[in-house]
Every structure is written in C-alpha cells, then in structure tokens.
Length: 362
Image 1 (cartoon, rainbow, N blue to C red):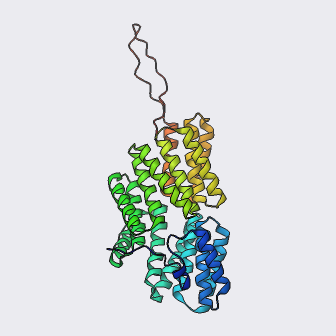
Image 2 (image 1 turned 90 degrees about the vertical axis):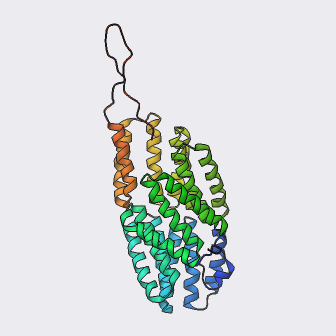
Image 3 (image 1 turned 180 degrees about the vertical axis):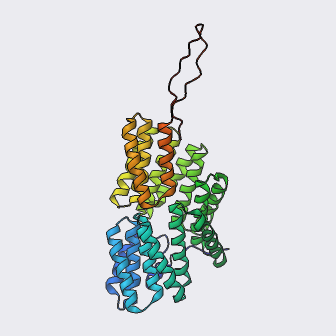
C-alpha cells in the first residue's frame, strides 16, 4: 500500500504551505517570501532549496544554480548534514539536467555520504535515486538496474508513491531501450495508475509519456498522441517547462515513426527552441538528432546530414549519452549502406535493371 504523494524537498513551514502538485510559479513565490523572512540559517537553506527546485523545473538554470549553492552554504552554517545533502541533491539534479553528468555524479555521491550520516532517510533515498537516474541516462544499465530495483522496494516498503513511480518508470525505460517493449509498457502503465491514485500529477505526466513512447513503437500512433496531449495539459498546469519540452520531443518521435516527417520536423524545431531557451544540452542534442533524421527523410543533402551526425556523435560522447550515440551510429550506417538493386521485372531481352532502394523508416 502507499499514501498520497508528497514533496520532501519542501521542508519546514514550506511543507505545510505547498504540495507536490503546486505550480512552480507558486512554489517560487512562496519560497522567495519564506527566504526573505527566514530567521535562521536552516530556514534560509530550506527556502533556497525550494527556490532552486522551482527555478530548475521552470528551466531557469542560472537562478537554480545560485539558489542550490546558497542552500548548501546556509545548511553548512547551520551544521545540518541532512540539509546539506538536500542542497547537493538539487545541484546534482540540475547538473544532470544541464548535461554535466560527471559533475552530477560527484555532487550526488557527496549527497549520499552526507545523508547517510545525517539520519535523513529521504535525503539518502533521493540522492541514491539521483545517482541511479544519472547512470541510466548515460546508458550504464548494468551498474544501476539493481539500484533501481532496490529503490522501488524501499518505496513500496515505506508506502511512498512518488518514489515508486520514479523507480518503476526508470526500470521501464531501461526495458524499452533494450527492446523489452511489453514489459516496459506494463511498468509504465502501472506507474500511471499509481501516480493517479496518489495524486502525483507530475509523475503521471512523465509516465504517460513513457506509455505513449512504447505504443508508438508498436504502431499505435493516434493513441500515443492522445496520451501526450493529456500529459501536456498537466505540464502546462504545473509550469513543468522541461517536461513540456520533452513531451514535444516525444510527439515529434511519434510523428517520425509514423512517417509524418513534416510534422516531426515542426515538433523537433519547437522542442529544440524550448531546450535552448532553458539551456538544457541533452534535450538540445536529442532534438537536433530528430531534426536531422526528419530533414534527411525529406530530401536533405546526404553530406550535410552526415556532417550533422558527426557533430552530434561528438556531443553525445561529451555528455556521456551512450544510447543516443548508438542511435547516431545506426542512422549513419543506414544512410551509407550500399543500396541493393530491386528485383527487376521479367523482360524479353533478359536485361536486368535496378534502382536504389529507399532507406527503411525507423
């Protein structure tokens, strides 16, 4: 069993004033007032943490960076190791969002150590979860698969729906990326159900995106687009800028898989602009890849596409995104593969004629 979702990153008086479903503009306003009124270093740290998280979710990365560092400094002044761990968790999460994955690992590793000595079980769990997600995004599944399972078991043991949804959707994503579509769909759909029953709107939006992804791979385009529209409504209601951009990128993926390349190009262009505005390199690079593939299908010069793929491969290697780099390599191989001749129609003079095969749709 599990209870209603809650947001442990909103601490002290903020925990009573805000919920897991508060819009991030509301969180930012409330936390900013609390920071201005804070009378102790610990209160300042807690308020700055909420300011950091609101700005991060809104895509304001510079403000988020300033806020988590202030939260850490105030927590250190207060001598509270748990608060220091929460601040480093926020900083590590921001670093991952910005594509600085090695830095994210360092911050989250320190957060785990601080939380372990503080007795703050939630800070410890969230920091471990951050490490697991960073490894998963890098494609290091062997290193983090077991950790995801452990965190799911902990979430179930303590009845924490939000953590269950996070861990379950992460496991689902690994199954999806390794071709286990049926298992991925089962887990994503269970995540949607748990998030709905726990009133975790944000978790529901991310899980719906996962369901849509798998359904579109299986050819259920219309159903996938409907689910993404439902998730987009949640993202807009809660001011989830990053989640909304990833929703748009997934909509582009769905169009691409359905062979609707002009619609895909339009949506990739939109998500690319959104990611650039919030300075999120991972989203920028993934949108660029989708855009390059769509333009190639629409007749872009092959050499221009290959040059773009070369740039993207370097970018994915820099960020540390193994799965995305594999996608670049696979598409380049498809573009450069020798074209097999078509089987000619019978002719009385036995002349064989062939024409280049059209690359298969991905």
